[in-house]
Amino acid sequence: MREVLAQAAFQLFLERGFERTTVDDIVARAGVGRRSFFRYFPSKEDVVFPDHERCLAEMTEFLAAVGDEDPVGAVCDAARIVLRMYAADPEFSVQRYRLTREVPGLRTYELSVVRRYEQTLAGHLRGRFGTDRDGELRAEVIAASVVAAHNNGLRLWLRSGGAGDPEEAVDHALDLVRGVWGQPAGPSPAREKPALPATAGASGVTAGSGENEVIVMVAAKGAPMWRVVQQIEAAVGEG
Image (cartoon, rainbow, N blue to C red):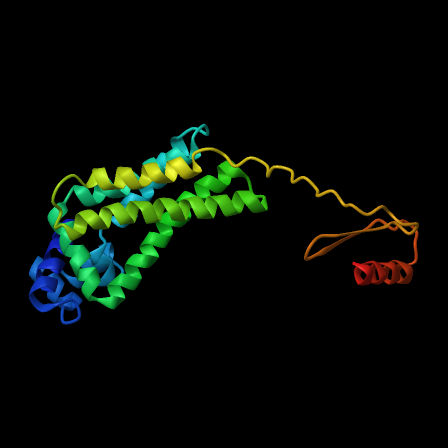
């Protein structure tokens, strides 16, 4: 019934346009009642994306079953589940792509669906990277990168009218993501402190002047702050 309603809706969208098609028109074309429509779709917009709930559930199930050894590879593989959904029905996928380009409201709705995929991927990565600041950041950035790469390859295929192999462009884009993010980020290398030519004074103020700058380091243990500031000002003035 879900497929029957989606097919009836798209026939009408193509004939009349999205805005001029009502739910009553859709159920009349499908030969069912309004209750049947709302049993499967909360709104007319949802009938344009009839397969995303199932796809999100499949993605969540897949990620719950994968191991911990390659989290970036896992989310890239999860994104391919979405690709296979589109590739399973090229004609419908191309029609939907063209329709969402024409109707701003559908484009907004589609972006909300894409965001749900991104959140699902980020949630999986957060569980692997930890909840510290960098782990959270890496999860969000990698998830966004995976979604952007997947969508770039997918839209190339959709813009071609569904010609050729959709996996080729998507695999190329996802391989780029894996190349960038596949290895866990290590700690930042320690930076060598520049040598300061001047010697420390009694208050622990060290000053060294370069061609266009003055470097001042304060190590004034127990010295009054006003004295430290005074000697810093004197050092800067001399430099």
